Image 1 (cartoon, rainbow, N blue to C red):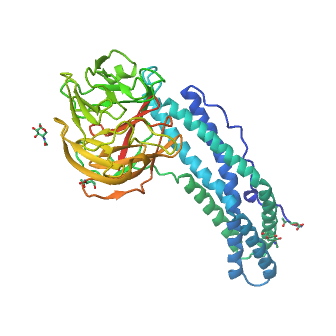
Image 2 (cartoon, rainbow, N blue to C red):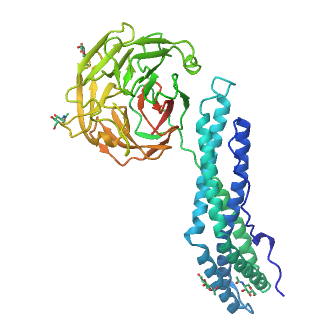
Image 3 (cartoon, rainbow, N blue to C red):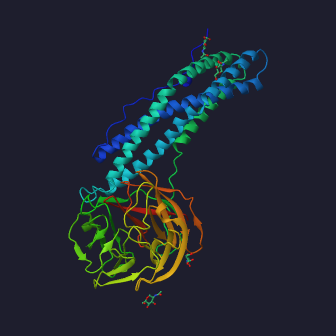
Length: 491
Ligand SMILES: *[C@@H]1O[C@H](CO)[C@@H](O)[C@H](O)[C@H]1NC(C)=O
Ligand SMILES: *[C@@H]1O[C@H](CO)[C@@H](O)[C@H](O)[C@H]1NC(C)=O
Ligand SMILES: *[C@@H]1O[C@H](CO)[C@@H](O)[C@H](O)[C@H]1NC(C)=O
Ligand SMILES: *[C@@H]1O[C@H](CO)[C@@H](O)[C@H](O)[C@H]1NC(C)=O
């Protein structure tokens, strides 16, 4: 008579749950959704994990006993058992069983970071002002998690048949081990099993703690002593631009070198026709006015209008590519005077724009940039074969102070910005993800195109991107949405 298997070896296989609830429009709904996800995740983890680890337990137990038993212990039976359990572990060790486990770990990480961001969102949530911020990105995340969860469940259920088979084998082994235990005078088999059960719960506990959040390094303000770029945060804020969805090209931000009294001023320049032409700059004197689309001031560029979404604000002036010319313009925010200077050899009028694989961003030939060192322009020349050229500018008279030729073909990047004299360029990976893949250090001349700093987008397109050294944020204009990110640096 074979005794029934002990309770701890009976493996639960259920991983189904009705967790694909739609994303609600209330924070509380989001939180309860996370709880449902969390629960079903736990279930899936228990089932996938149980199958893989069950084998280790059996195999180890058998091996030990062979070494230490004596007297009338049935060696032959044990050896046979060992062979069967080995066969069993081989069958369990195939990649398709491991795959869902990896995915579950990933899913768990994503859930954790989502939960953190929902907490942040809740803290910032004040009823109306911030209600739009960060919300869309959370919605996208939840949709993505639901998708992932469905995939994992599908895989798990495909493995179900194999698991049932292996499970039966494992139960057979368990019964036989129980039988053999009767001969185990030194209680070695039993103790060994206890140890393994302990080990197992320890290791599943560990894998639950596997997620280690990246430590946030606060860089020294106003200095370049902090290291290379490590990561880009999730979007810290996002909202539709103030003129509506039809304006998919524009630029916005905050002056990194503001005139006294204008420290909290936010600016916005929209391309009003053909995604090419801008005629005015709109300013809000505080972030809350900017958010609620409150009182603003419009200033028009009387002589030289704006071409493209590459312009930026620095030291109380707006710098941009003058309309239909190979020139840079500087619009003084106080006097409203415009000066214009030819940027030597620079391609313009869509000669060297930024591009994705399938399309280009119109009139992005000259991209103004700011960093700790001042004002820069990113462009391309025929001399440099259409590759990116970076020049530091004298912000008073727009003359070029220094220039570097890079080997990055400008059309192979979707945008670029500078931090501490280092150029970073991005490329399009998917509608949701953009990647910083390239850097050029103007101080050392070091150039690399193997970076992989990915960050999440709200919409697929990136028409404008600039770093503000004062608040160390990245300001982005993305298919009519205005978005900001924090940057994280190596220590
Ligand atoms: C061992 O596993 C293989 C499949 O990997 C199976 O065909 C075979 O029957 C198994 N042998 C025993 C003794 O269970
Ligand atoms: C389990 O044991 C029974 C009887 O000992 C045997 O008929 C059956 O084939 C075994 N199943 C597996 C999966 O090894
Ligand atoms: C960039 O390349 C052009 C063409 O070869 C050359 O004339 C220019 O001097 C180079 N600039 C720098 C800073 O090396
Ligand atoms: C920038 O240009 C102004 C006006 O031409 C000049 O006075 C100043 O010295 C220049 N600054 C630098 C750093 O070259």
